[in-house]
Length: 178
Image (tube, rainbow, N blue to C red; front, side, top):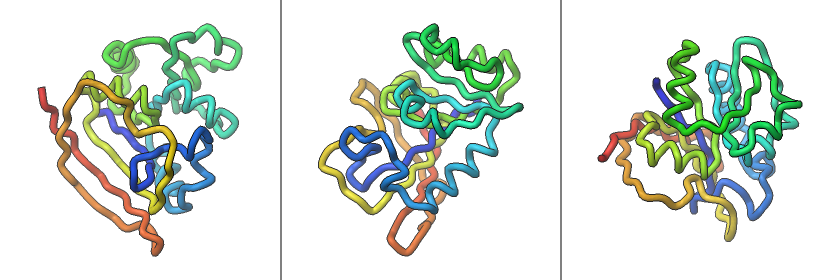
């Protein structure tokens, strides 16, 4: 399975402004446009519980697109789950990929956050990274990837300036280091 991670961060690597999970308060329209085009293009989207909690009011389930939320407590979300559209799982990244391949998916779009990204990087499962860098710096906030024991090399595929402010979109291929 091809696993693609898409994230937006500040110049100093923050994905939230302090404890505020609302990234739309500081990210550019150009990044949002890119992100939503990418979402529409993919049929399997995976996020962590924290990301789900931050964006759940904006999620519009649709036929033909499955959103998976990885959580330690999937039973907590039984009342909002919609089979084949919005599902909650506690599987490891490896097990989730096996399950999704059995269901016919060939590509997985990861949309964060830091704990989920760490788990997939540690398991050497991410193949591509789209990283938007917004020209901002925050003194506090969450990081793209939580600290962990892994090393990954990246090869730049493309670089695109998205606006006059200096928002930059980087596209990398992950070169797995074992």
